[in-house]
Image 1 (cartoon, rainbow, N blue to C red):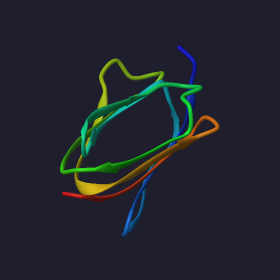
Image 2 (image 1 turned 90 degrees about the horizontal axis):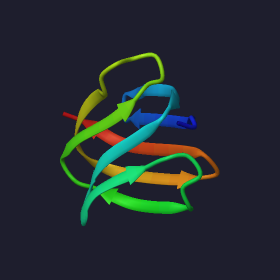
Image 3 (image 1 turned 180 degrees about the vertical axis):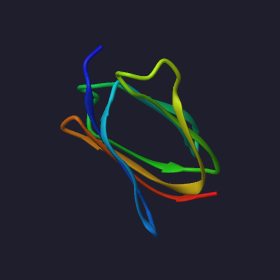
Length: 84
């Protein structure tokens, strides 16, 4: 699976910055799945869990959020969110 860059930023600072294989986030209209080479995309996020896969970890990483925004463009996924 192709890797892409992921940035998760909270009001307190960086939560995660690095490579990932996929991101699943709680979009306002339903869960959003992001893979490498995804078309440009913007979504409002609701409260829930962001899951992302790291290439060297057997299980997904999870971050609980209160809401935020997800923006994907050019193999960079940026998530601005408030952790719970």
